[in-house]
Length: 237
Image 1 (cartoon, rainbow, N blue to C red):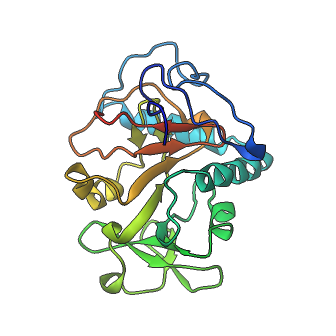
Image 2 (cartoon, rainbow, N blue to C red; image 1 turned 45 degrees about the vertical axis):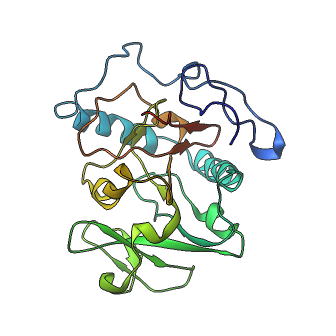
């Protein structure tokens, strides 16, 4: 990784996308989807309303936009300088209009093992290797997960790269999730130690929002990747 991290003031974005051509911008100058009102969002009273707005915006994307977005996102993830050569990579099963990871999964280097999350009774996530055709079960939220016992599954700390879905994101690499706190609880250990796992939040560009007031339990991704941009969190954030 060279230069200042993206997401810091006046820092350039990583010049690498599909076809080796890049769109150069800064986290603060590329804000087409933000409201003119840049006030911070209240963490308790406004997050639910913001989630509703962003989820609706995401659902309105056309099938063509979703397919193209997933392919471009795969290019961007696979081009990350910190993509490991071997080890476990955690993804997710896309639902409710989330950007898909299928293109990323099928193009992973041979040394990387793709995993899906599953719910554990302690309120955190575990992870298990999964390939297309492997058995799945539906969890309490209606989301497919590997048909394995959570007690014997892998921990988040076993992952080398962890790709997280999101409802919204900011230029400062804040992540707004669904509100259940699963990833925040699972990744609480990252407050005390650096990567691995490298945490990457992914979504469509249309999911960007204004800065959000942090909650004490929030875990910020190291990076945010969209089909067109890679944002890096400032080390001090």
